[in-house]
Length: 223
Image (cartoon, rainbow, N blue to C red; front, side):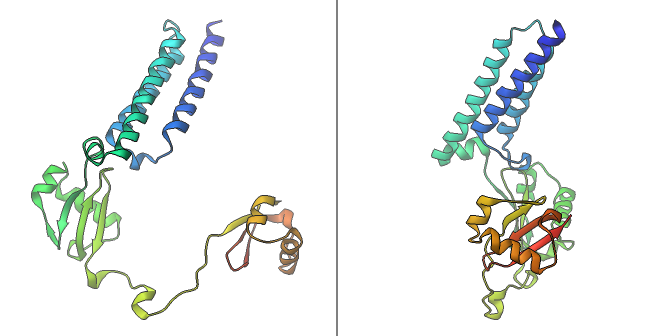
């Protein structure tokens, strides 16, 4: 009986967690603010405690999870509406390198050291710190880098060249099945798709993925 009760509590906690996640919204862990991270851990801890401790009444655990979820959602909405609240809750970016010069006071403020800065620079492809014009620690803890003008990558604008816009690719076949709705969005009929697949000596059932770009160009990937 206890086993069945634990199973039911676990399923209930999963349903509540899923609902809270849908309401609050999806974000990667690297994009979470410190408060979002703490709220997420707390909700997960409450769910785990509710699922394994049969001495706790189920409604108390769900109530606690909902309260934390409402607090997280409320602060998120407050951050969207108020710049001051956003800066207070999420923090503000910190400039670590400005015009090629390391700002030591801001590094201390960000609670990192030079080795951390150099490691982040290498991860982003900058093995020479002198190639960096600006480095900014975002409120998520991630460091963004802007290279020196002479070290940045060239782009078509530098050559007065305007590349053709490719647009988004639409998946029209996935795992051997035609995606009817996506095929309509791509402006292609089923007959046209079958014709193009046949022209490449392929069979639809053998296609793992097929994409169509804005120019109606079909790209096939076999299983």
